[in-house]
Length: 203
Image (cartoon, rainbow, N blue to C red; front, side, top):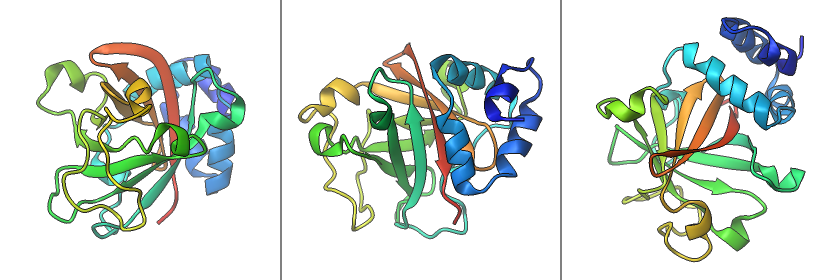
């Protein structure tokens, strides 16, 4: 059964979705998640509320050292031509902190819009956030320490055209499977009803 059919099935089958996705190879998972449109991603986001909470290790496994890049292939639901909906979120574990991850967005729009740096943190302790997901990609923050040497220069999200996309934004994340997560974008505390899937490269 393809992912779209599993997403359309009645609620309570999150285990089937995880088993199906984790049974595919990496690019099979990417192809399946890229097949989902906005309404399907919204439904997957809702189903993912029943999955186990995410941890930072889902984005950068413990086996990966600090300042080592881990790439996640993304597909968003923004009103853009198809290829421009594909992007990567690139994460690393800081050298001087163990309660967050650093990251930025890579894709065809980066030269125009900018890298969209962020800090990824758990939502535990912020009651209004906890029900949205256990992890938040926070564009209100940018890395304050060293990042991967090959990454672009760290800039805040109030610089250039980034202000139109990333400034004042947070992405709340939920687990779909061992390799797949789904995010919902918020501007401040307001949901935008836009979603994106991420597929972590094996490490």
